[in-house]
Amino acid sequence: MKKIGLLFLFVLTAGILFAKTTVMYHTSDTHGFFYPKKGRGGFAAAKAVLNQGPKHYLLLDGGDFAEGTMEVKTSKGLKAVQLMNKMGYQAATLGNHEFAYREAALENMLQEADFAVLAANLVEKKTGKMPAHVLPYKIFDVNGVRVAVIGLANAKPTRPTEKYTFTDPLAALEKVLPEVEKQKPNVVAVLAHDSLADDKPERPFYIGEIGRRFSGRVHVVLGGHAHKIFSNKYIKDVLFVEDGAHLQFLGKVVITTDDKTGEFVAAESFIIPLDIAKTGEDKGMAAYAQSLKEPGMDEVLGQTADALPKRSAKAADMDGAAENWIADVARAYSQADVFVHNSAGVRTGLEKGPVTRRDLMDMFPFDDTVMVMKVNGKFLKELVRTSLLPRNLLAYSGLTVTYRKDKKGRAKNVKVYVNGKKVKNKDIYVLATNSYLAGGGSEGKMFKSVAAENKKTAGDKTIRALLEDALKQGPVSAPDTGRVRQLK
Image 1 (cartoon, one colour):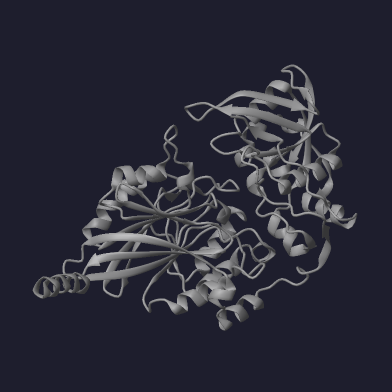
Image 2: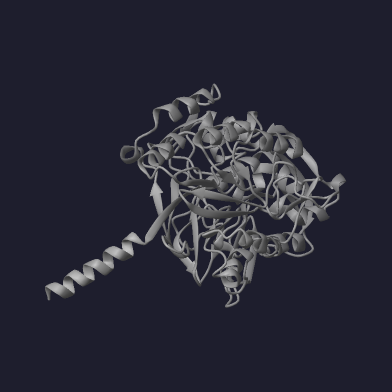
C-alpha cells in the first residue's frame, strides 16, 4: 500500500511539475466608472487585486471605456485611456461607444494609448487597410507562455463613422488565424465587444459560432457589450467569459499549459467582486483617479422616495423603474401620446435617498433632446414588435404591451395599448422620443423612414436637464413596471 501511495504521489507531483499556469485579467464596459459606489468597484480596487496576484499576467479590456461619465465625456475618452495606461493594460478592443465622439476623438485615443488596440474586423473605407495604431492581433510573452490575442470590434458604432467600416467578424477571424498559428502561440484568445447572451438556439450569433467553428484553434473568448456575467461557460472546448459592467467585477482566467510541450491543456475563469472591504484599494491608483475627477459632480440635486432599479424584480416585467421614470418625465415635457426610450441608454438605476449630479450622469450620460412626430398605429405596433426579443430594447410612457414567446424565440400575440386603448393601424398618434432614436441610432432604425421635416424638437432642454428639474420638485417615487410584460 505504501509503494502504491508513493507511486501515486510521484505521478501527481510530476503532473504538477509539468503544468504551467498563466493568468489573464479582463474588464469590459467600464464606461468611465473610475470610482467606487456604495463601497464597491473602481480602478483602485481592481489594481489592488492585481497587486495580490502573480507578477506576470495579461490585463485586457473589451471596449466601451470611452463614454458614460462626465470624466470621459469632457475629455472625449482621453481620461479613460490615461487611466488604463496607468493601470498597465496590455490590450483592448473597440466597443460601439469608442465612436461616440467621431473619428478625430477616436484617433486621439488611439494615439494616447500605451496598450495595443486590437480590431481585426476594422478597416478604412478608402484603402481597405487597418487604421493607424490598430492591429488585428498581438502575441504576448507572459513568463515564457506565448498568448495570442485577436481583437474583434463591435460593428455597430454609437455614432455613424464615415472613415471606417467593419468586415464580417468570423471572416476576419478566419483570415487572421493562419497568420497567428504560424507564430506558434501556446494560447489563442479572442477579445470581442459582443456577448454570448445574444447567441440563441433559434438565432445563432457569431460569438457562439467561434466556439462551434474554431474549437481547438481558439481557447478563450472574452466578451462584453450586454453587461452580462458568464463564468466557466464552454462551447465545445472554448471558454467564454464576461464580467458585467462599470468595473463592479474583475474577470480572471487561469490557463494551464504543458510545461514540456507548451501545448494548451485547460482554462477556467473566476469573477472577482470588487468589494473594497475585501480587496482594499491601491493608494497610488486612487490618487491618480481622483486627479481626473470633474468638479461639481457630487452636488445633491434631490431625493428619491424609493429605489429606481434599472430592471424589475418581477420576472414577467421586461421594463424597469429607472427607464420608466425617464420616459414619464420626457412625455410630460413633450405632451405626446407616447414617449419611446431606448433601454440601453439607461446605464444604472438610482438608490433610495440623495441623488447627486454624478448619480444622474451615471444613469443617463447622454445629451439627447426630445423630438416629436406623428406616426400611424401600424408603425407603432411594428416598432414595438421588433423591439421585444431576444431582449426588450425599448421603454415607454403612455404605452403598454403584452406578448408571448414562441418556440423559435419570436414574439407572438403582441397586444399594444396607448393610454389603455388598443392601437389601431390607421389611427394617428403623437410620438416623442430622444434625439438619438429619432435620428435612427441603434434601436431607432425605423425612425429613418419618418421624413426629417416631420420631426420637431419639443424644446431646447436635454432629457438630463428635465430629470434635474424633476428632482428639484420633490422626492421621486418609483413608477410601476409591467408596461412591457411577457406572458406565459
